[in-house]
Amino acid sequence: MKQLAIKPVIHAFDTCKEFCEAFEIGEGDLIITNEYIFNPLFTDLGIKADVMYQEKYGTGEPSDEMAEAMYADMKADYKRIIAIGGGTIIDISKIFALKNVSPILDLYDGKAEIIKDKELVLVPTTCGTGSEVTNLSILELKSRHTKLGLGLDEMYADSAVMVPELLKGLPFKFFATSSIDALIHALESSLSPEATPYTEMFGYEAIKIILNGYKEIAKNGEDARIPLLKDFLIASNYAGIAFGNAGCAAVHAMSYPLGGTYHVPHGEANYCLLIGVFKAYMELDPNGKIKKLNKFIADILGCGEEVVYAELEKLLNKILQCRPLHEYGVTKEDLDVFTDTVMTKQGRLMARNYATLDRDKVYEIYSKLF
Image (cartoon, rainbow, N blue to C red):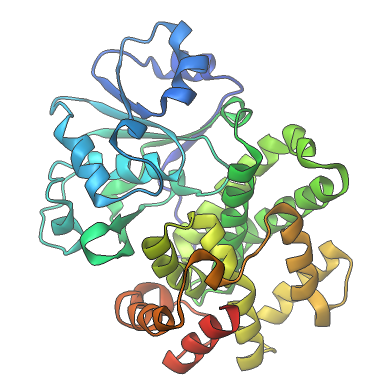
């Protein structure tokens, strides 16, 4: 059994200037980013690369329509795609490293020939997706009213670059949603049937860093995150390595219809499902490796294992308040539709559940969180 694979070479620099000089960014490169990221940190560096601003093609979560519009404006002769941004930019840029991009639905349907013809450099500006070290691209497919993940080895980055300077301007809400996403990557991958001692090592370390950071923020306020940004960036990267190998499961699968239908940010949508899914796991199989995970979390939180999820939710709510599904506009009729979507379209993720969740159990989880 394969134990661990880390495909990109991981680099770290303190500043954007150091990164640009080391990678000799210039002609033949396409930088995909946001204007609010590029202008304050890169404009004065005199970079002679082409720059594309993602927000000019739409806002919010990445979608096939957004990616198609961006691709239509791209030249065909770039040597490198350099993505500097959050999950939206990184997920779209992975697709742009391929030779055959449009129509994007053909990629998701397995109809396009998969050839990588550009070098890919991924530079995260949030502490959540871990996408810089995975081969996954998750897009909202507008015509199908859902999100789907595409996993291709050709979409691994050649280089993943950590630059803590890029996180200093990240507003607290985005810090919260992205870092909770990283935490869930670590939690789900640690329980995955595909987990190994190596992936668990990265996952458990990410959990420890994030929860200890949250305790500091809960005690001292939002600004307490600033000196911890490098730690959170590393934790996100660790979690990305863990779930890039062992995978995520029902939390992500069940969050996709919520995000796709009501445009709830990815990390927030995941948090809506987290506690409900893990409580269901405990009902179904309390004595498997979830017991080890619960003890680990309980030791960090300083509580008993029997109240670990109540205490975890209490801490997370100080970072990002969990809301019932109906507050996002979800209707009772949606619960059946969401359940059917999960059971018919998210088999890849549901196969990695810690305990088997049938249709009735998935519907029950949604109903309890409604």
